[in-house]
Every structure is written in structure tokens, then in C-alpha cells.
Image (cartoon, rainbow, N blue to C red; front, side):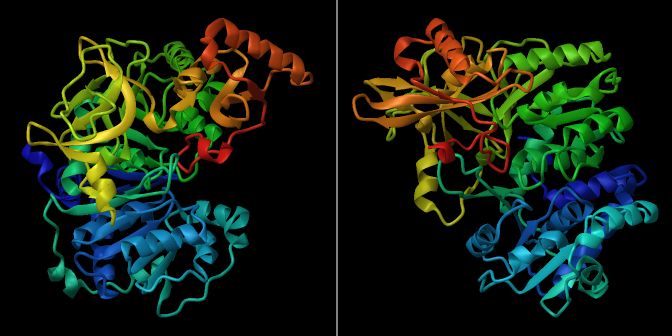
Length: 549
């Protein structure tokens, strides 16, 4: 395996800063921070962490959106051999309490506007809270505009020994402490990310420097080998998510590219940024591309700057892919929207559709050094013999991006990380899929989402794919509900597109029942259809089907 993987994450930043000192590393609301300056800020932040008592091996919780402080704190924490515990900035108080306690964090970075969520949390190990403002790194005129529109509405926070502002924290650095910095073994824990929580309780996923470096290098190699110093990548996906951290942030640093930080997702803002910043790469979940297609600002935007456009985090509907490909072509781009597959347990993407060989329904080919196979669903204790091509089974994989394990969950870890007959550890994804004769992977559904109905095994995602293909449908979700006669029957929630006449829901319902009769096997047809205005979503933009249940 490449020796480039076997260094620490901050060592990658140091290499990028040495090679490209004057290149813009961060572009945040028109404030530009060079790689030289970023490294200075990271070192200063690292010294400040040591000054407040954070030590190698400590865990530090970062609860911030995509602002410069998030990037600075992340690399600084790792620079002193500590671990970054990444959580959603919109987390509620109990969620912050859970993440801090499960990781035994002694320091928490939080946004000033959300500081009140930390009041009253019971975290015995927590010693220091550092609050940041989204305006801290804005240019004076932009900062004044931010204060007028948002900043003055934020309640002032009284500083004390255990609660301090980012400015106070950063001026408390003691340069003499630099000698105490102790970067970790690259194979040791570096980052804790959290599962999306779509099918059960959240779990902390322990990832090493090696894992995330491997992801960054392989993503560039397979996705955008021409990405180079100064090229821009839109960092729309948040840093608490493996996709945002591993691809948008660290892959950019790996290439010496410029990270265009987007603190809050908004299709209008993203469309404007594509027009103004001319990024080389955009990465997002399918809902991003759907939103951009509906946004008038994308009309006549010159996309010739793009070297790559990638979707992941959820299944990319064929209709969205083809529509966005058409949009790109009309806007002078030669690239196609490419879908990847992965999960946080292997940082994020581990397979990607080739740019020149799209196969409908496929999530592509594995990255170099990552091996996939499909095994029988009932082989919990082996043997883990690969199934023949085109045969459904569980997707399992091995390679340099596979996690260390689940935090404080040895039984869950043993359930998904299993040693196979070859002596290697394989990640059991819990996903149903198959492989074709050429090694292309096809994802079908989460195995846990299987519904038993009249003796048949039904996978909701397959029904949702049919419903989503209907011209009037924006998104859908199918669940099983109890029934006194059939035990379980299928219920479909369908969010209609904005231009659909919703005045006669009975007529619409009959239209969809007829559509289902024509396109779905009888035993898999929904018996109940509802038309909600929206569907509940998880923090990473997936439909929270457990809430619908």
C-alpha cells in the first residue's frame, strides 16, 4: 500500500503548506487564508489547546458548521496527538451531552448562536467550552454586514475560566509548549464520526489517520486525478460527516486545492458560488443536485470549469442523474455526475462509477486497494464464500479505509468487522446488493429495511425507486404498518412536486395505485398512500424512515 497513507493527517497539511505556501487554502465568504497562514493558525490553536490542558490522547468535541475555526481546530487537535470528536452543529443539548460523554471529551468547540444548548448539560469530563462566531474571520465590511443582519441577534456570552471566546482562546497560546506536541501513530484513532441514525441508535465510528489519508488519496486518484494546487472545491457537505470531512476538506488539502467553505446549505447560494467561484469539483448528496436543478440561477451558468461532479450519501435516482448531466452539457461542461458508494464505517466513498462507463443502477467499481464481494445473508458465522455474479447478498469489503471499530461497542464492532477465511478483516455493510460479471457493484437496499409481507421479502427502496420515477413525485418513502388481516401491509408517503395540482387527493391516490399496478409486482404494491408536504430527514440529509414508522 502507498506509503503516503502512513503519515498523520496534520503531516499532510504541513506537506501542502510547504509545497504551496501562497495558494489559498480556505475561501470563506471572500476571506482568503493561504496554506502558510492556515498552518500558522493551526499551530497557534494547537499551542492554545495545550495551554488549557488538552493532552495527547484526549478527545476534543467539535460542534461547528463549515467555518474556518472548524478546519483550524480539526487539524490542531490532531497536531497534538488528540482525537477530534465531530458532531452536528445543530445538535440538541441531550445529543451534545451524549457525544461529549461517550467520547469523554474535556473540551468543546461550539458556535456562539448555539451556546445556550450547552447550558445544563451534565458532562463530568468537560472542562472548557470555546465558542466561535461565524463572523470571526470575515473582512471588516462583511463582518459589519453580518453583525447588522445576524450577529446583533446573538445573545452575548459571559466569559469565565471554563467558557471563552475563540479570540480569547487563540491569544492564550504559549509557544514554549510547542515542544510538547506529539503526533499520533498513523494507525491510531484520529477522528470519531457518528452514524446517521437512520436504522437505530447513533454509534461513534473510530477512524485512523491512515483511514482518512487513504480515502483522500484514492478519491483524487479515481475521481479527479487532475485536481491540483489552487483548484477550488465547494465544501457544501459538513465536516461532521465523512463525506464532508474526508472528501471536501481533506482531499482538497491532499491536493493543495482551495476549500470554498459553505456554512449552510442553500441551493440559491450554491448556484451563485458555482457561477462566481468557478469550482473544479462539486460534491453533494442527491438532494443537492435535485435542488440545483430546480433553481433558476443554474440557467446559463458556465460550468466549463468543472473537472468533476460527484453524488453520494444516498441513492442517486436515475432521473436526477440524467437531468443534471443534461444541465452540465447545456452549460458547457464535459463531465458527468458520478455516483459513489460507501458508508461512514469506511470513511465514505469506496467505489465510484467510471466517467466513461455508466451502468444504470450501479454505484461503480471499487477503489484500488479496496476489495468487494457479495456473501450470503445467512452466513453470519461463515463460510464467507463469494456468491456468483448477479446474485443478491450482503455487500462486504476490505481495504485501508475500514474503521477501527465502534466507540465503546465491542459486540457491535465484532458483528460488522469479521475475519474471513483469508485471515483479513472484512466490513459487513448491512447493505443488500450484487456484483455483475465485470465487478460493477449494485446497491439495492439496507438489509434491515426488509419488510416481510405475506411471506414475501420486500425491499422498500426498490418500490421507492419506481415511485420516484413518476413525473409528479419529488421524493417518497415506503414503510410497513401493522394490519389485522395481512399482519403487515405497505404504506407509501409521496411528496409531490411543487407544480402538481393537489386539490383532489383522491384522484391523485387512484392515479398512483394504477401506476403501482402497472409497474410493481402485486405482492409489493402499497395499500395505503399519503401525500405529506415533506418527509422527516436525518442530519445528513437522508429520509428518516424510522420516524415515519
